[in-house]
Image (cartoon, rainbow, N blue to C red):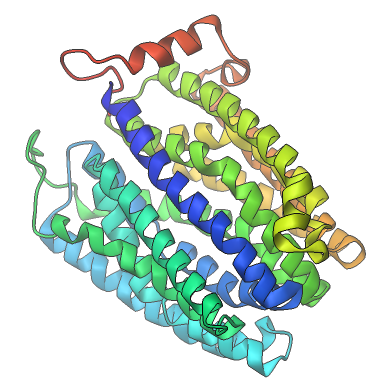
Amino acid sequence: MSRLLRGIVSTTAGGGVALAAGLAAAPLLAQALGPGGRGELAAATAPLMLATGALTLGLPEAVTHFTARRSGIGRRTALAIFWILLAAGLAGTAAILVLAPALSAGDPGLALLVSLAGAAIAPSLSVGLLRGVAAGRHRWRLVGLEKASGALLRLGAIAALAAAGELTPLSATVVFAASPLAGGLVYLGLLGRSPARNAPPGPAAPADLARYASALWPGLVVGIALSRADQLLIVPLSDTEQLGIYAVAVTIADAALVFNAAVRDVVFAAESARNDDARLQRAARLSTAVTLLGAVALLAASAWAVPFLFGPGFAPAVPVIALLLLGVVLGNPGSVAGAGLNARGRPGLRSLSLVLALAANLVLLLLLVPALGAVGAALAKVAGNIVAGNTNLLWLRLFHGQRIRDYVGLRRGDLRTGVAATAPRAGVGTGGA
């Protein structure tokens, strides 16, 4: 099996376990908290997720890029990055404390939950830095183990609290904020160690790393905003019940992203090491095909599973799930293409794609959520995914001469190539990862 495929399998497995744990926890949360309480939990943790993504400053991804290119980073640079992220995390926590009353629409209880969740920003950024090192070294088993262990710990804590009758928005917020940090413990073995082989000829210059991170960071900020802005704005524009319905729909629809996320992360590291247009296009096509099959299966199951497992109050989530799954599938080719842009030293173009997508998303959120609630937020998400994905493909066409049609559909040799990649063989696989 090629190293590229092993990385995708390991990351998908970790994401799959995390997905299963999340889906198992979702009915417990829904039944214990109800639509309103589930909405409070989503509102409390959304600023944490947004800040954790935005305040990376692009540094973990830059570490992945330069480590995968075999240039690596020096110890002093790594320590400096740690302190920068720590300062950014503390600043983010302070900002959330100030903004908590506004983010909670004046509800003091919800403001407390938002503030508690915000305390986890700095530790979460440290875990992200270690994840970047592991990805650059192609330690995908560790990445998968981190995802799985954090999700399993969260499920265990939620189940225990539910059994004891102590599952409340407050206790659930603490669990959601703390559980990812436990998953980061799997990376402690990376500290103080260098890759065992293919030693880098010399660390990347801090200026090169800073330039790459500064071009990539705006895209990360906008991408996180694109994925979280809806959950931040639904309460001010509608109410917590609509947010609770939307949060359940997002939890289920995100299941279709597991394979795409694994492909995107592994392809980014592989393409950073060596660009291969045919490999990138094939990865996009296969990822979209698998994602489409998963989306169809999820939609078919959701029609009966959501009312049965979550309760009749969450039945309106079904059409929201259908819309979100549509957006996932339509945006999938461009998502993989975005990883290719980053790997080819064009993170600024991907950032521009996401800026345009966020603009479309925000306009539609403001127009549709007051009247349509969760359905309006889902329609806005579909539009954002379409804009982001297709703009990434356009950049590859304009700046790298690639054909957009090579990223969609399936070719006769795609499945044959995928099957061949799983066969044991001597030497390193063709993935170049």
